Length: 97
Image: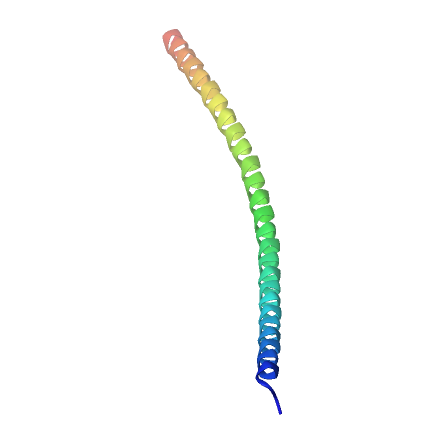
């Protein structure tokens, strides 16, 4: 027969086992969540690296656009000068006739 103290001790053991099992399950669940976060962080790192490459490529394109704009401005200035000279030469040619 079991005495009351034996029953209490057995309940305490069961409670301790239950708590230990619960804690073990909690630890395993948290470990899985940590691993998922780690995977997400690795994926995020890849995205950030890709984004940095896109920004770098865009920077190169912006530099090229700036250079092209300066060249276009210079070509326009030269063309304007040539038109002025051509108009002057046309006027001189008309005066000679």
